[in-house]
Image (cartoon, rainbow, N blue to C red; front, side, top):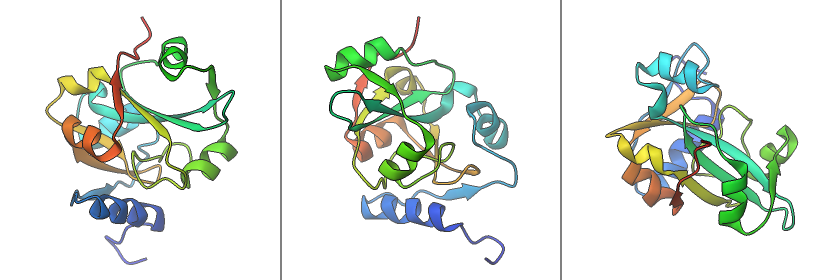
Length: 162
């Protein structure tokens, strides 16, 4: 790879975004952006502006469920299960990789191997701009909450754990 060239997973995200009509700049950082706190520090934004991707497994159907939550929030799994109409559980690294094509810590909102059911934390809509993972544990891109809803077709819901 030459300096400035994106890693293959980040290039896939950039291509998926372009295919959806979005020309966002995917940025890779030398430091990790795997956690919400690391990502916020790297890009210089508030923790709540990080659109963290959490993958769950629907227990009955086995389908992947992508929750895009504010980096400041914990997801209420019971609320999530009620919205989906079935119990959910955390997905292990193998399930995440198989269903999304990406490793935990770099799962983007788009470009998944198997399109997931997608829910978006309502709290993200309070920000003018947010940052989402872009395929690797150190790649992100900036977008608006409206863009996130449009690109994923996700259902906006109250998902924060009280």
